[in-house]
Structure formats: C-alpha cells, structure tokens
Length: 250
Ligand code: PGA
Image 1 (cartoon, rainbow, N blue to C red):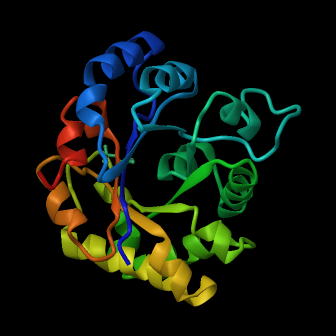
Image 2 (tube, rainbow, N blue to C red):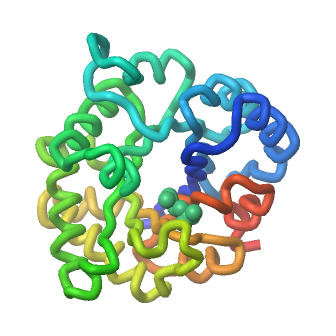
C-alpha cells in the first residue's frame, strides 16, 4: 500500500493576515509538490488570506481548531460551516497545546472529529505523550487510548479520511526530535490500534504523521520509516525552509 505523504504546517499563534499574504505570495511556488500533499494550518484570521493566496496551487489550507456545534451561543468560537464556506479543507484537532492550555478532553475532541467529517473537513487528529509518561513506560497505552477515544463512533470509511498525527509533547518546539525509531514505534502502534478497531484495510490507508521538531535536516530519515506518512510541522513551517521538508527526498 503506497500512502501519499502529507506535510502540514501548523503556524500556531503566528503571523498576521498581512504577514501571511507576504509570506505565501513569496514562498508558495517553492512549496508546490505533486509527490506530497501540502497543507498550511493557520490562525482563523489568516484563513481567507491563505485560501486566496494558495488558490490553484494544489496546496491545502487548514484551521488549527474548531467548535463541535454548527452555530449558537459559544462566544469566541468558530464552527465547521464557517470554515467550509471559506474554502478550508483541513482542521487540526486535539493538538497537545489545545489539550494542555485550553482544557480539551478526548470527549470534546471526538465530537469535533465527528463534526469535521460530517462537514466534509479533513481532521488532523493529534496524540502524544508527555516526557513523564514516556519515562513511566506508558506511551503506547496512552496514545492507543487517545486514538480510540478520538475516533470513537466513526465508521471505517470515515477513519480513512482522518489524518493522525503522533506528536510527543517533549519534542514539540524543543528542538529535541524523537529518533526515527522512537517515532516509528509509536506511529506503528497507532496504525495497529486502527487495525484492531477498524480493520486492516483501513489501517493500510490511514495516514499517520510524526510531529515534533521536524526540520529539513531530519525529515528524510523520519519519513523513510514504514509507518510515518509525513509530518506536522510547527516552527519550521513559518519559514521558507519548510520547502526542504516538503521536498525531503530531493
Ligand atoms: P514543532 O511543532 O515542529 O515546532 O516542534 C510541532 C507541532 O506542535 O505541531
């Protein structure tokens, strides 16, 4: 099974709309790829600028979060229909920063995944352990549970549309990348839990990214691993060097 790699930038809370327009108009030509699906996940206020700037390039745009209801009294939130209408294609759900700083639970994240799929948005569902959990030897158990909970109630067909992102929290923004063996071990475990619950055919198709200090220097080695189908990239996606990750095999 040849899964197409997917490299997604996660800008987090960086770049204003003007900065987004300037960066993407200057850099987009270098980011285009036939071999790899490329996505920029950007702050809500930058989405329209990104959608317009990237139109016709084949590069997708994603949000970094969304609410699980379509509309209503949820001050400060943004819904799936709003994203969809803007031409957004992907949405990052359950990033560790959302879990840690904004109290997102597996239950909320599961509702968001369901809503995204029902709204024809492609979720990038994140999982990953803390350093304490890794040192306690419960990484695999923890990540398996996050994946099971995040995907709860979906059909196998729906799961095939989800991108899973394994991001060890201790490797995010720290410059400390998991070794390719460590990343492979957990990405394989993620695929195995999908196989157990949704069957081998679904596990073969579902894409599993690694995230955590991915750079042009380590992308080729990470993406060569059997169960790593690309990366979710924070810091390095803010610069033109992101192209080195997209064209990792050149
Ligand atoms: P990083 O972030 O590449 O800056 O480590 C990854 C992420 O949080 O998605």
